[in-house]
Structure formats: C-alpha cells, structure tokens
Length: 142
Length: 142
DNA sequence: TATTGTTATACTCTATAACTATA
DNA sequence: TATAGTTATAGAGTATAACAATA
Picture 1 (cartoon, rainbow over the protein chains, first blue to last red):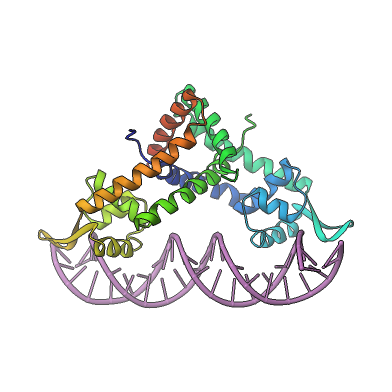
Picture 2 (cartoon, rainbow over the protein chains, first blue to last red):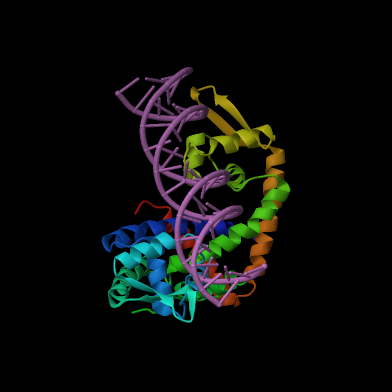
C-alpha cells in the first residue's frame, strides 16, 4: 500500500509551470504553442499530410488549420497540393521555420535543464528514462 | 546539447492518458475531478477556509464554489460559518467523504501502479522521487 | 478600506457536425 | 461511398470584474 500522491496530482502543476515558462520564449519568437508543436513534428519527422500531423501532435485536424495558416503566412512552412492526390496537401518546414524551431527549443531545454539540475544525478537520469518510456506507453491505444 | 524531447511534450500526453483513466473511476463514485481534489485536500490537510482550499489545489476561488455545493449536497463535506469571522466558512470532510476519497484513491493508484510496472525498478523509484521533488519546486513562486 | 464568499460575464479551448473537392 | 481539408456552431473550462456581508 503506497502512501504517495497521485501521479496526475503531481504532474498537473508541474506541466503548468513548464508551460508558463515556455510562453515568453514562444512569444519572443512569434510562434504559438501549437505552432511550435507543428514545427517540431515537421522538423523531426516523416509527417507530410495534415491528418498525419494532427495525429502526431495529438490535436484534432480541425484545430491545426488556423495554426498552419499563420505559419505559412510567416514563411515557416510550405503547404502545397499533392499532385498524386489533389485532396491532400504536402507540408514541409522551411529554413526559417527550422531556424526558429531550433532557437526556441534550445531556450526551452536550457530552462528545463536548470530545473532538472535540482535533482540528484541518478534520479534525474531515471526520471528522463521513465518519462520517455511512459510517453511511448501513453501514446499507445490501451 | 541534449537531443531529448521537451519535457512538456512528453508530460502532456502522459497526463492526458492518466486523466482519461481516472474518469470512469470518478464517475463510478459520483464525484468530479475537482471534487476529488477537494476531498483530498480536506482529508490530508490543514486547509479550513475556501480561499486556502482553492490555493492548495491550484484552483481559482470562484471555480470551486459549484464543486463545494455539490459535495455538500451529497453529504461528503460540511461547510459552516466561522463563529470568529462570519465572512469565512469552515470546511471539513465527512466520514462518507473520507470513505469515497479512499476508495477512489485506491483504484486510481492501483491503475497507476500497473502503468509504472512497465518500468525497471530503479527508474521507477527515481521517477517517483524526482516527481515529488519537481512538484514541490513547481509550486514555489519562481 | 480590505477581505470572504458569491454571482455574472466574457473569453479561450475544444469537440461536433456539416460542407467542398476530390477519389 | 469514402476521404482530406475546411468552415461554422456549440459546449466546456477558465479568467475577470463586480457585488454583498463582514472585518
């Protein structure tokens, strides 16, 4: 019988504080939270269509449209019709988009490292390993 | 230069999946998520007034009122005027409230343990230790 | 004048359904 | 008929401001 706090009870304020720390960084580079998520998925990944992108970042397909409009207008992504299926649109990150993504990411992770520096090295490593594993598990159905 | 994912990027879907797992448990016992948080704070803690309660669970004072109404109507908490300061109301959990809180908590943590069982023992322990520490840090101003 | 609890209002986010153009 | 993207609408959740009672 454990007498610890519930995981969600601890994760919720932690996530809130991380998001609050990200906000000024994102604002300084002129991208929204979802915009940053989109740039990350396009920079890292094999995602090419909007439906696949929405699924990759855990968003509804209807919700990312405004974000894509903004990113495209700012020249951070391209969105071209797929010649092989003219219903679909092929997304790609531009050089400028990649640049912004890398700057934002570096600043965000630098802030995270300052937070993680409070932990003993062993716990810090275990935490990151466990988090990667749980993240993979949580994204599976079931 | 780390090449890991952002913390928030991993924490967000994990929290979502934990919350989704809690939902049917809470529904089966007839309490809302915020109701469960309130019962937890009152059962554990030294919180007595509504303002202190709101602060303890990270909610706005205007947001918990409907929750308190529901809990009181269900006989899970009491809410009496403070004779020493008639503006304030003294909150307390009832026996029935404590009973429900313990059942829900046991079920939620049992589900969490099933998830954590996927991790190597050392990472699991480091994860929980780190999470407790980060939770405390995140609740501090700064 | 400040504070506790309350109510009312507005704003943001998200989910759902319906539409278009292609297939 | 089914699918990719889009638009419109409604709902939930949240924040802000204003209020009554008490200090």
